[in-house]
Length: 145
Image (cartoon, rainbow, N blue to C red):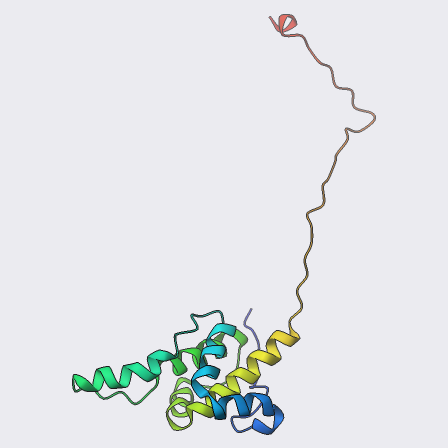
């Protein structure tokens, strides 16, 4: 059964809905990017690829426009939580305003973590006793021969 698709809980430019995420991203976007990666259970250093990749690849004459870590995290969050969008929209969002993209992902992860319910159950021990009408005969090994 397919999971019904939902929208992002906040818009791309919904910084007023969570000013702490907006300020965090504005004053230190690389720190916010690393926080988003960590909250998504990825390596916190993953967004550093967005900083290092363009300079390394351009040294070899390969232009890189799309930030790979931002795009990968955005697509991963979208698939994990069943959010409606497309790869083309994710690429455009990551290229045009990576800061807004990281802020939106941070707000989404905060919302999803707050909304999740965790139920911890201990396994119950089950003791079965024989039915009272059934008698069990224990045979001595010498009686079987």
